[in-house]
Image (cartoon, rainbow over all chains, first blue to last red; front, top):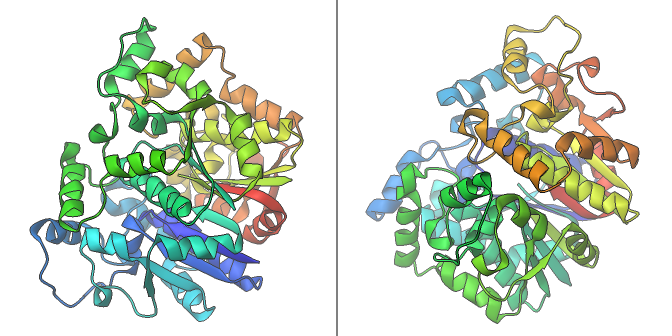
Length: 155
Length: 155
Length: 155
């Protein structure tokens, strides 16, 4: 059966959870759709992206928010960025897959990754500032996918 | 098919997401129930409400928490209230519907809005302190609605 | 019908909401599975637990995170621990069941409580540091349960 995940959060730990669930479902043969909205778009940003003319506020949002998975913070115990570094180190020690590997696996497994166009407009993200292989759509597309799914999570 | 959303969060960005999803589903012909609990009740508060005798602690909770959609903060990058102002301005520039309009549309589309009575008791909110058109019920009512729905989100 | 809840959060208010929903569903005759992951494991920790040899980082995580329900903070208005104390007092005044009672009821009602083994590895929690009566499994087990359920929430 199909599964959908709305990834609203940009926190390292929640992004990690989302991709672990999504990859687990895909590995079990499910069609999985991930819908990235608001801060959830941050994990899709290229660390270095083409420059675009943006409004002052969009420039501020874009400049202050993390660019890609390596820059995400923890939802708890972030300690100005030390928290994610600690968690990444423990994950290596425990041989847990990294977030970057999980995102690559998601692509390889054919998980449909949709970036929310309304959120992109508000935060001022252009298509070429986000990683390749995404689809771009709005809430109606998400709802269509969710209607065909038996597990729908908001993370 | 029916949809339910538990709105637990009082963050501007999450409340916005909840109403965008709810209105999208209603526009596609779905019956939608929103169940407002804990901080999610804040967006339902009247900016100016009748006075009630409350316990000291309930008075403190009520006094410190935002009264209505105009006062909500962001879950990230709130900057002491500047964040929501920035986001509202960008939303206007991008012609995105405001939260207040989304809430009105939800009413107009007949979305069932239920305020959680247990949370109201804990936080000390009386019925006439919340906006008109709500139903008042507990978790059993939510579960009854969710049982008939194919998409159930916790936001 | 079956229900599942992923409890990712360790915030007092969200843990409370998760157990209220879970117990409500169980009381209505549903099979309920709760899957505790990341910070959600904190509510399962024994206040006093056997000592284990851990890596430096796991020791830090374990030392800094709350041990059991009595130590959890609020997601909003925590005020260095005053918030949860206030909320607990109001809950007593309003005769709302305590979190500890809700957790006991969950056990008594036969709610299946699964601790996520991958999160336990990362955070360095051993089985005997968590309360009795848990099952230990990974995301595949969760997905199997979710596939048979009609309400699946991520909290």
